[in-house]
Length: 597
View 1 (cartoon, helix red, strand yellow):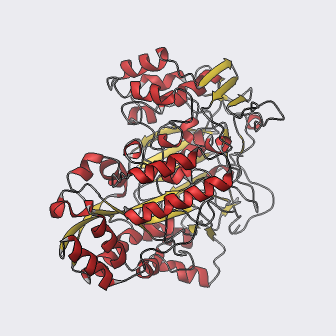
View 2 (view 1 turned 120 degrees about the vertical axis):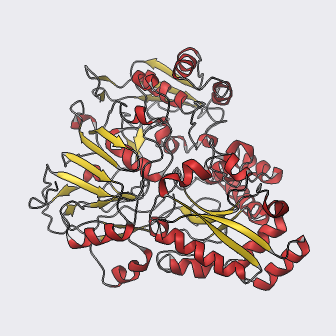
């Protein structure tokens, strides 16, 4: 989501997955083509895309395609399974030996201490191979707060883990050098995460959090080997040298061009209950257009098996759905994805977007139905009119901005801005993103608002624009598209409000509050809801926070979509995993006569 996590711009919508890597809903097996019931090992799985990961760094990546990448070579204490025909939104033990509970001694009586055992035999592919340890877990969480590129979902847990905020505040002042970062990590304790022995890690919380195991599925909580400190966080050099504890290792990564994975000889299937690793090699080509990818997957091109960061073009989805194409899967999500975000600090138009009436006017002037139609129609894009999707605790149906051009004009006049010219940042390689820009441009013109485009390559969209606050402050963009999915499921409203709407603590690069929205009333409600002693009280407070955000209009929600994915016929056991918004590459196999190349 957070997707995420991930953290997540709908595949159907923009051909590129979103921040905060998560969505919700059941995992399903998509068409099996010529599959037999018996798995086939071997071959090369070819994945085609139009963009790259955000970072090849487990503790930093916060983008669903980043999570897809990490599935191959990085493990967490807990993760989401790829079990055919089941709900793949419930975490299972991965590096951990089991799910901690009060009954098994994993959770203390006061609910504030979690004790977790790491599987023996889970190893790094170092020379020689060595055990993943509790110290690696501590090091990994410390790395999330690094001053070069901190993890984008830190607001989820900054005030939950004992001592984390103070540790992160100190880390932010450290020079951005490899030596300084290593020294701070090695010498500065993080009291909330303790290595009790080589394979036992203990987490200390400031308050009970029934969702903590779900939170630990975030890749931010991945272990980090000592070798990770030899390179700057999130760097290309690190991405090409980071040891693997998963079934595959990164052989080469050429950003925006290609990634090649091969088997990790240090991985033992008996220590990994989640990944089967049927194929020998995975090759990702990141230079293919959305239309070409779909054509190759449908026509049986030998080097086209799975999508990477794209979906079927929205214009083709109705026909695929109508003919019940067995290789198409529509997975449920728990997301607001995409949404239109407003740059509340833009200096353009005499700071018009700082005025709540102007933002409300824009919301009235956008016709949600028009956008959903160009994204593939309401079947895969059911409308969402407020912050929380209906499968998240605290969601309450409200529709504060029904389409009304006259109301928009009235509010603009009252605010003293009857005519505006706004810059819309969008991904020009994505059909959905481009068409959404064009649709918003047409809709807003009816209210006297001129919209001009700021096109961006997929790979630059987040890391060079939205995640850089100074770009927003300079007025490079006024409107843009974002996407967000729950970092976990059910009791997960925190993972929407903390990263997106909690004021300064959620500003990029720490959070994903791209429009730099800050409102004291909203911040207070978020704090109260996070500390609510019961789920009923939390649900009421989250609903109030939702209404408060919508009244301030920092964004315009569009849909909680179904996620469209397509695979070639030779791909078997294609199981959709919502947290990756994709089929799990580590559990597919290729038909014997089409083993890739």
